[in-house]
Length: 234
Image 1: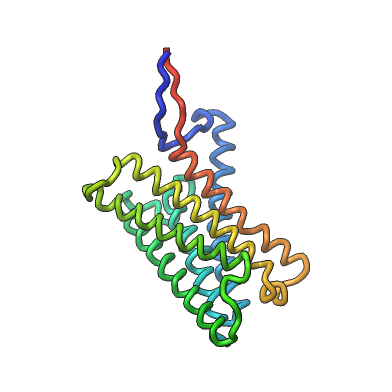
Image 2: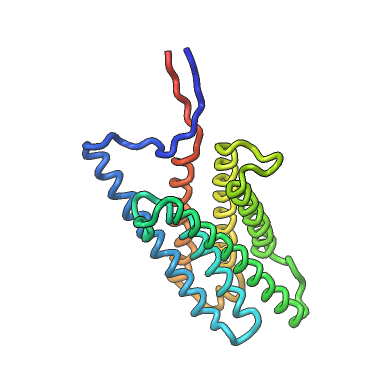
């Protein structure tokens, strides 16, 4: 018996031509569309609730939601085979767009943190005083690490660079961890005094659960593409 471990670009799914396969594809397509709508909707809502320009802090939710709710989500979903607004683009074109979006994530995240630091200094409030802020710093650090792995993929001939297959796995895994951290940070933001004073009632509970939808879609997309599977042959 021979056991091989390999990485499948497709993942497990029902066989084509079956009713289960059609249902599977339909459910995934609806889920991806819902993830797109959620990412755009949350970004717009956060921007409206923060009323940008009214204070230094007001720009923090704008930049962070645009970076992590919108750009990071779309940067992964553009590789979705079920429903991507850039499906007409070649693989090379989508990789370039992915890179642009990830750079915007990093720039938006750093800018958002900058406004938060400036706001804390003006109000003379302590830094890193909540789980939201601590997890936000970790999210930004892991995002920077993920971008570093992406740079290694762009320049695979750099010294001491692992094999291409391992680099892809590291990049995808780090990206998934960064995204899950971002979702946790966004969820914790909804428990802050500012958000709970702005949004109340049933709407608050709905918004707390909304980020889980794109997180599940992206987690499924990445794990089905890069999760190692065992192939057993005799």
